[in-house]
Image (cartoon, rainbow, N blue to C red):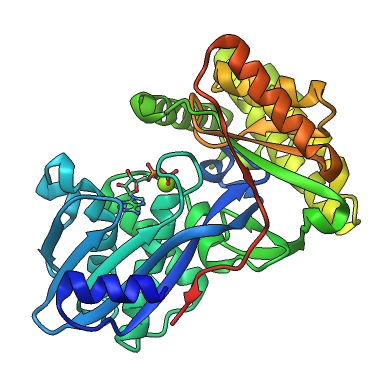
Length: 381
Ligand code: ADP
Ligand code: MG
């Protein structure tokens, strides 16, 4: 933190006015439900993105990142970044510049921003939303603009949708801004309403491991759009606004002729029920029982939604054989991370078993992160 202030002084030749932090997240359960107006259950990680910042009075946003090369400057006023066709080496700056452009309508202005992060990028831990939310908090604080957190989450989502051109849902930004320690956040993606649900694995004698499977999802972005389109097509055929509204699953499946659409509907509808069941288990103080929900979610994502990948299936399988309570792939699919819930005193064995399964296949060793439900975005200094 003092390190980032010092680095800011060296980068921009003047003092930072403050440092802000926004966490990455893991979604416990509720995968590919967000854009179907459904339910999700994310929690914030202790890792995230920090931003040291100071105002500028010339209407310019100037950004640097300790994880990227070069300085990017752009006017706060302007259309969308995506329409300006920035070259790939500065595409990362679309997130903070886009955020500044969206917030300008609310009264914020130019700024110098220095970014630092301890989150892996593109690993499904939501470094993009952390970057947007840390930037948003910094700008609002610097300019004395008050926006409540649920609304700020919508604005950060808008920045990613309109400015970056990524059609993400509301989950990542909500988790980063609304999370509290020792809790997961149940978010209704239709209403935007959320509730805090107690989730403290270590207190329950459990460990939640996030495993970076080291398979990158970058090259298969089109699959996400395809699944979205399939869900929309199924909803239209069933005459509902979104798959969230399907109440009679068996009836709906009987009315769909296309087996692919039937599988997609089966996943989305049952996954919403799994989120509700998981919230019930957590409220009852039965966090260990979540393992069964994670396993069911993984099988559904693998067999009905068809977006798992070999490293994820291998990691989950090895974890279960080593006595974990459950595990599932997380994120968009075809790469990224899995989560595994295990009794804390078995965590070492589970980790070793996954690493051994990887070694046997000659794959790059996976990376492990002990995920602890942590605080949402805040000012650090
Ligand atoms: P995820 O959100 O799962 O990490 P995304 O593809 O949504 O994956 O977002 C990753 C992108 O966010 C990176 O490619 C980069 O453009 C930007 N980003 C995230 N963290 C940083 C950072 N510390 N510095 C610069 N850009 C970052
Ligand atoms: Mg992201």
